[in-house]
Length: 205
Ligand SMILES: [Zn+2]
Ligand SMILES: [Zn+2]
Figure 1 (cartoon, rainbow, N blue to C red):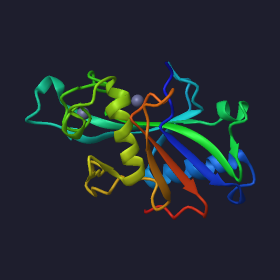
Figure 2 (figure 1 turned 120 degrees about the vertical axis):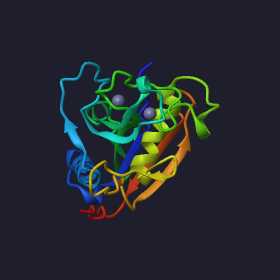
Figure 3 (figure 1 turned 135 degrees about the horizontal axis):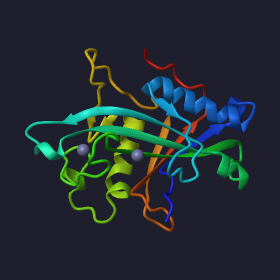
């Protein structure tokens, strides 16, 4: 079953002259706000996305973790808009709409990518200890959503692993909602909805 996008953006049509511009408004904002590195493929398993963006080497899980399981984390977002536009799902009343799939996982260069069940950061631990089912849909997806909406993972602020320790941040002060997933074809724990009705706040530098 394909992934159900766990983050939806609604952009007031007065803010952009076209659907493409509305998409750019958000993706450019996120790129700057979170310092995302963007990738345009070709991807081995694109799942219908237009492009993706990542941050690597966040929150390393080091000693006393078992040596073979140590890893840092990646934030990974995939954007979907061409497929929605093709099916005329790109506008709803006075909003442009597009979707993304976000998750937080073992970083891509680590041999354990993507799953380490016992990791206190990205594993089936803490508040997620009792969730059943696919680790990606039940843990990695809601963690990615938490980071992009709040700048936190498990309520802790995430910072870049450099001397400055700047906050990774997230989308910032916009209207956001989180709904339960796992209904119908929504094979992900939670769905985030971001509603943009005024120009986006400037990104921190
Ligand atoms: Zn990923
Ligand atoms: Zn982890």
